[in-house]
Length: 121
Length: 165
Image (cartoon, rainbow over the protein chains, first blue to last red):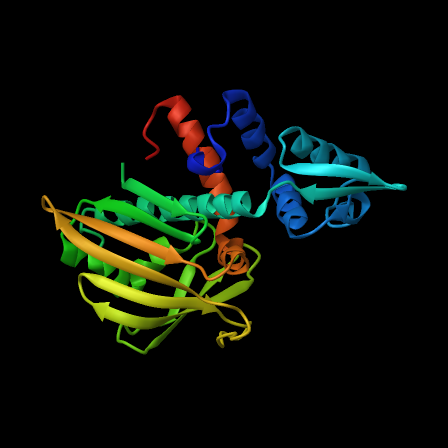
């Protein structure tokens, strides 16, 4: 509900949403998404960024691919990974991320105001 | 719900979020006007914000930084474009270099905050606008992590049907 903008990409079915959220629940996978949104990376290039084996990174990429968050293309011996969003959808996702940031801030504002002394310093 | 409305326009790269707060307009304004309060809600958990200078007058430059769990500092700044306390604040926001100096190579966005009384409570609307996708990405670089985590937290909260406090 927050990651995707209903108006732009339509409702995700439950199974798909489940896969997306599970895929993004891992810090390495989030980082891979961010990197591959900025440009194509080979799996081996990605693997150099993390203290884990090539196979482990490959597995993360597979989870992301299954969730539709990245696409993979074979080029010679390399597997190139690319974040899977067109411009509008990317904007929508960024707006969704921004929404989440502000929802969290609004929550913190409310908490401050709810303090016994009204949060005044 | 604290957030009562969100309007996102991907074509215009604009988002308006409406927040309802259980406080008077004057009290809610302090969330922005008092830097010590601002610091408590601006940065995501684990990335506390520190406002180095904070003068809400037109033309003034406000500098802040957020400190990552690894101790890295990320500087940002606001330039106050308009202020009409306790009802309205308009700032240009951008990034700084490692020493906190504004980095003019990086594009800036704008943020407009309005506060209105509604049945003894305050309706705060924050409208963010970005000149380009690139700017938006930069703005979100720090918040994105929280965005994701928060999104997942919200889903979990809804599924568990328990208040998150």
